[in-house]
Structures are given as structure tokens and as C-alpha cells.
Length: 639
Image (tube, rainbow, N blue to C red; front, side, top):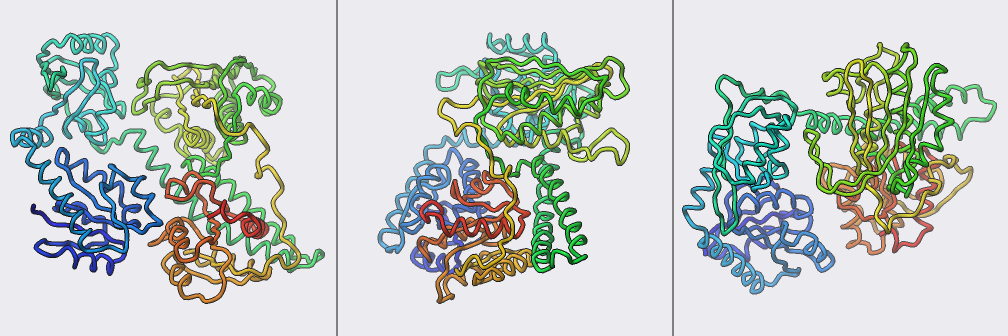
């Protein structure tokens, strides 16, 4: 047995001690950065925090080493054993609990290294050489099933098709890249017949919509009794490769989405500070003080700005949603009067609503916002046109197989509720269509519109698990289609009023608490403002500027701590990781997260489902109400 051992530990001292146990006759690499995962080693050993932080990178490295087995051993506390079940086979293969005994550790390492050696011996050297040749060849190579599904492809082939990676190709069929119906049918028939193909000329369409001339060659092969089609893809003579700088629309939308979400998150911190201090000033000023009007204006301006950040968060799919079970036809019917009042007298609104559309799981106010934005967009598109009309349709649609007719989008098979808003307006050319869902993009004159209507609808639909696209041509009007997956039989509670529909919590006049709160926030202005609000209402506040400082405070603070109030996204130790480790130091400690991100995003970062979340930007009364609710609620439900 040979090979280095990589120790990836969040605490370097713990890694060093374990490295001393393993260093007998072996080279041990102790690291605290996931960059070390790219290096050469035969076994990885990680602790719980490192696994949670780097499991995707570990899984990628394990896949890259396949068919060789690259084992990873998880060293964890008894309280974190559930991590092993969560990441078993994906990023962890064996488990050892602390305190670690040297004989047990060496035995488990020995077993894992023997398993790796056996996997290396089982690989046919010719197969290994062929795999490297296939992956690195400068010619586009691919293997497909007889039905046209791409089973594997090399990097060159993926690049030619405008895909982000070779792995992305395995989610496609050859039919996805052939726009001509007859040519697509002819190729799929040849593949199904397992007929050899010699330099077949084709016009292909990349994922970003760019078309190019290519030749495709293929021969049938048997692999372990299964028929496969092995082929080559080449550019036709004189046809240049589309420039890599022409990013696919889907990738551009994702990039803009991340940028918008980051801007909104930082802006929310600033707005929280403005709103908090405005509330404090209003509480200190007498009712007849003339300065109250100035403070109210500041506060109202901050609230209007908060609406803007909500739209940016909607586009970036990071807003707070409260999904319930509802039906699209009921939404459209309930909004009919509101929509008619917002349309011009010369614009006809008609509804064609199917009575049997399946229920969906979505946030009612946000879905109403989607419909309203689409109708207003249609109104603007028909301005100045005689006899124009807007039509709202709903229907159900059952996909027996995945729909890949849209470039870069695969809609899974299943039942969908469909909402369509059509207009007889001016329509859009292809350049406008490619940017229609981008935030702040508008074809109207400067100052007439922000350009957030379609982008907000896009974000809400995507965050709700649905799909949205538009079909349009100049002079032919526009149809925007929204597909939402049907709700499962056992779904969440039916539509109920949401807390956001209620009036905001006022700032209490007297003391509301005497407990001690550990306040963790890396934005100094937000932390100072929140601490002042809490102290003014009788709370004792221990401040920490990040997760690491909060862990030190948990260990050093001798008095009682009743609550951790923490931001989610912070440098170093995140709020979610802090909450997990706080349970070890202070069992039963309740945690209240505060963030501009949604509950789903907090859960995706490792947070507990159902954890309490105070959404930024918040007002003083909302902060105090949330703290009071957590402190008075059952602790088991929170931590």
C-alpha cells in the first residue's frame, strides 16, 4: 500500500495531532484549504466542518479519479454522526468518532488504502490510456445510446456545442442541437438503426443559439453487451468556431442574477441601519416636534428602496417566499377587477381559464405580482395600437418525457399548471428577446420604467420551481408562458394569509426583555444599530463581529446567554456553522438568523429547516418582535 494521506481539517492543531498518528511510514499532508484537494494523494481524511464546507469539491475529485476508488475518512464527534449518512458515497466512505484511538485509526486507514490499491489493479491499463486519449483529444468525440442520448463526450465536443462542461453533455440528446426537424429525425433514425455514418453534414445550434456547419461520423460498438454509438464531431470546412466570449443566455442570466443578489444583500444591510435609526429617532421625538416630518421622509425613502431590493432579490431567487397550495385560474379570476382598472379603455382584456388546472405550490402575493407584471408589460407593448387586446389563459399540461425544445433548458416530465399572457403588441426581435428578463433592461425611454417587471417575474417563477419563457416576433405580438409543477397529493397547507400582509410591528414603548443576547454581525453599522435597539429595551448584548469571535465569546463569557442573533453570510465561520457548533458549547441555545436571503437559501447553506429567520431590511419593532417570539417559543423547535 502506497500513497500520501491528505488531512483536511478546519482546526490545524487537530489535523497535526492526527497527522502524528498516521505519519509512521507514510507522507501526511495537513491542510486547511480545499485547494489541497486538487493535489496527489491516495486517501483523504476530513473533519465535520471541512466536509460541510468542501463536500462538493471532494465529490468532484472522487468523480475525476473514477474508475479508481479515492476514499475519504470522516473524523467527527458523536453529535455530528448524521453528517456521515448525509454525505455517504458522495464525499465520505468511512467514519471514525472522536476521541480517536491510534489502533482503530490505523486499521480503518489500512482498509481504505487496500481498497484503493485493489481498484487501481482492476483498471485495464489500455482502458486508462484510452480514457485519457478520449478526454484530451483535440477532436470532438462522443458516445451515445441508439435513442440519441449522449452518454459521454470529451471537452472539445462540449465546447463545440456551447456547453459549460463535458458532464453537461450527458444531460442532452443529439436532437437538442439540430434545429431542422427533418434533419433531426433523419439522424435519430440512423442512430436507432445503428447504421455507420460517414461525415454527415449538419447545421447544429449551440446552447447559446448560435448556428454552425458541422460534420458528424459514427459507428456502432458493443460495450459489455450494450449497443453504443461512438462518434466524431468536426466543424465543416471554412466554418469558424463561434467565439467563446459569446456567453450563452442562460449563463449570462445566472451571472446577472448573482450580481443582483449580491448588490441587494449589501444594500439591505445599509437599509436596515437607516430604518433602525429612524425608528429610534421617532421614538425619542415628541409628537409635535417639527423634525418628525424629516425623519418620516427618511424612513419612507428607505422603505421605497427596500421595495427595489425585494425586486432584485426576486430576480436572483433569494427573496423570502411563503408557499401555499393554490390554483392559477383562481389567481387570475381574483385579480381580474384590479387588472382591468390598470388597463387603458381601448385595450381589451379577455380570460380563458381552464377549471381543472392542477394545484401548485407557490407564494400567492408573489404569483399575483408575476401576473400583474406580465399584464402591465403587455399593456405597454400595445400602447398606441388600435384594437389591441391582452388575453390570459390557464391550462394543464402533461409531459410524458422531458421537454428539451428550449436551448439550455430541460423541463422534467410530469404534470404542469400553465399560465399564458398574450398580447397583440409590437413584438420583439431576437436581440430584445435575449435580454428581456435582465434587470433594468427596458426598450422605453429613460425615466419611464425601471425594467424590473419581467426580471422579477423570472426570479419568482424560478424560485418557485417553475419555468418561464416568451415567444415573440416583430409585429406579431408576444406570449409569455409560465409552467409550474403540479403540487404533490400530500402538499403544504392551503392558502392562508401571510404574516407579511399584516401591519409591521410597532416599536414597544417600555422595556420588553431582560435576557442576554449574543449578537453576531460582520457589518458594523447593522450590529451597532441592532445592539442599541436591544439595549434600549432592557436586553444585555454581547457583540461579535464574525462567527469566529462569537465562538470565542461562547467559551469566554461566564454569564448566562439566552439567544444567539446572527447574520447568515459572514467571512470565516458562517452563521449556520456557528449555530451548529453553539449546540455543542451551550446545548439548547436558541438561534435567530437575520439575512436578506430566503429560508430556502439558509437551508441550502446547511441551516435547519424551520429555523427562525428575520428578513433584512428590518425595522426596530420587527427585530424586537422576532427576538421576543424566539425567547418565548419552545426551544426544541428552534435549535
